Every structure is written in structure tokens, then in C-alpha cells.
Length: 171
Image (cartoon, rainbow, N blue to C red; front, side, top):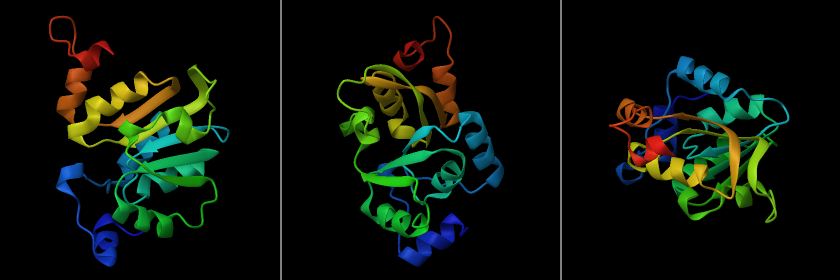
């Protein structure tokens, strides 16, 4: 697949600082994220902020269905082309913080609790990591597993012990 720099250039795009866009380029990190998600062919994956679709394509090879929520119209144009040959991928044009995960996954209004086979996978921007994680954890229907890549400072806050805990660590 094309590397992120080439894709951005081809589509005349630049990472949008306001959206905290950063793109996965190291194949070993990509493999680690997919492995950590422990995907099965029957799983539905909610990918938050798929960007250029590099992770999305890898998730589509491992899971039964991938629903990729992308706020940026420029990135959605890239995704439509890059992921065109993957029938198990749906691109949802939305802000993940403004939608209920169960709704974009089509789980139905009566679904509540944890949903087996629904997993969240994302390479999250620093400035919305806490909000996204709280949104997913507090959703009407939560995932059975979430595999997210975050900046080290955010990971440290998530793993903080008593006396140093943030709201995110408590959640």
C-alpha cells in the first residue's frame, strides 16, 4: 500500500492540526495494534478516525466487519478510494463524540451493556483521547475490547495509581 506521505500528496491534503491528525507509518506498530485487538472473523470493529485507511485495511483482513467513523471529508475521499475493494468496510461520516457507537454499528436501540464481538480500535489524537475513551466506555453498548494507540503521556494518566488518578484512570 501507499505510504501516508504519498497518499496525502496525491489527494492534495495535509494533516489538519485542529483534528490532531497523525498517521501510522511503521508496519510493526500496525501489526501490534491488530494483534492486540484479538480479532476474529466474526467480530465487528468500530475504528475511530481511520484517516488514510492503513489500519482500516489491516482490520478488514482480520475482522468480519469494520465500521470506520471519520470526521474529515478529505480523508473520507481517500478512504473511499483506498478501501473500495473491501466489501466488509463501511465509512461513516461523523464526529465519534456526537454519535452513539451502537447506532453506527447498527446494534439497535434495545441493545445495552457489553456486546460480544464488538471491538474498538483506533490511533487516537492526543487532544481527544480522554473524551473518546470516556464516550466509548460510557456508551449504551460498550465494546468487549478496546485497542487504542495513544501518546505516552495519556497512557501514563490512564495507568496512574491511587493518589495520581485522573477521571480517565477511574473510568
